[in-house]
Length: 292
Image (cartoon, rainbow, N blue to C red):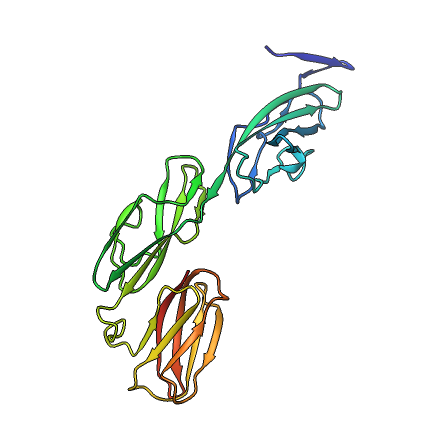
């Protein structure tokens, strides 16, 4: 049914509001809502008013949220929806009121679905001998989003399948794995480190890798790590520790006669780090250490 209004001898179709299709939004990405166009008919210019009411919590802890908590502007045709970092929020309904120059109004609504995510900080620890494998299965620490999901484990070091929740791991050195989960609308979230696999040498007197002149233990470690340098290397040594992003976070100098030193790593957050040991003659060797 089409409605018409007559003003000063002119006929106009009644104003029609279009809040647009329902929107699926990732928690870390903005989304645009509203139609294309958001208002038609009637007598331009139009006035837009977006409203919403969302109650978070229960009992003595209640937060009432309105459209201004989610939208960058509640008076424009196509505002930006800004997801809130609150895992309880999954769906918000917005009501749009369009008013034309003649005071005629039209109302429409739109649902915005946010991919809420949650994490747990449990961890699994395994110790294997160099050359052995371990089957990792049944654990994930990223929840939420819209199924179905895609999985990706990183780093992809020694994994038979980095895209499954069950896989064999045969790392050559100690490593910690974390999960990145992508849902059906493309929202991608990475969880904290989950699987810690400690690779031990077959003999405590052997160095960790063939030809290596530096041995570190324990690895993974929580507090202190001992660095042992083969006696065939001499000189004043420098130990440097780098974060996963390549930032230098620790530096310790050895004196010339030191071939074994204990490093305090307790002030660094858990994660996988790269270390480098150098001497003044230009010799260097790198390795990986996991801090729990």
